[in-house]
Image (cartoon, rainbow, N blue to C red):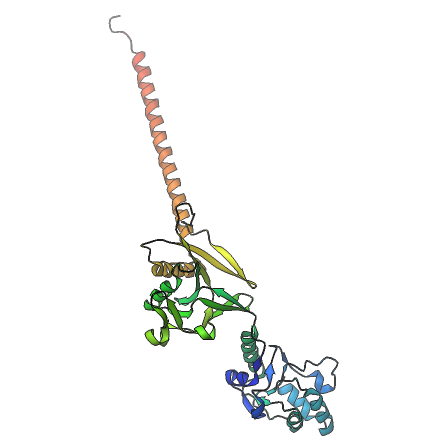
Length: 341
């Protein structure tokens, strides 16, 4: 988990302009993704002032400040400029108040700006800070992008995860992380996986060593991060082990607050795992779009049972009719008068 982000990183990744304090961007750090809109503070209410947050001023705050006297506004700005305050951001290409610049210079606090509206700036900064400051968990496995789906391949060491990922890369898919995958929760339903900086674009193949996937296969063979949509667990095949054969045995793995579907694929000599994973990815996408091959099989089976039942009933009815006709014929024959009499 990253404990803080520098204001310089925030400026570079959210395209902010620097009005003042360019030399302080690296030294100022941000430890929370919450953004403050200091409206009440402009009125003098400082009973609760989150000084450790980015302070965002929009049209409302700037318009209100223009109606304040120089002395009152300067006093308020000095109270807002605390040593732990990371930066001030002015949206909508507005000019920062001179009182803000004067107070910010005393505490060496950067004053930033943006052409975007307040809501857009707020969204961009929040998304970036949440990604960077989110709690992270390290998982053992290989993360690949197959047909736009993020698939985390897990299994015992030496079972063939990296070799399978290499085959998938050769087939046009993309590698995100090998051996160790860092995952974090982006929102209530999304889990994102990425590679540690030291392992980025690298793949370990036993007998060959470490290879650079981007150098060998090009930039189209790698991604920096992706959502974790599906977990595929590779397990050694044994006669006693039971594996899903109909496709209705999907499990869920709970990571942070997100349930990720998981399927288990048996590993056996002669099985092409890359093609099987491709098929699993396409089948998972089809299921998410409302088509389930297992339901189709069940429906076909039920229709066949009904058809066979109807056919059996028809045959039994015909047999019963034949028996009744035979009985009638036998009865008529037994009642026929004797010709000798």
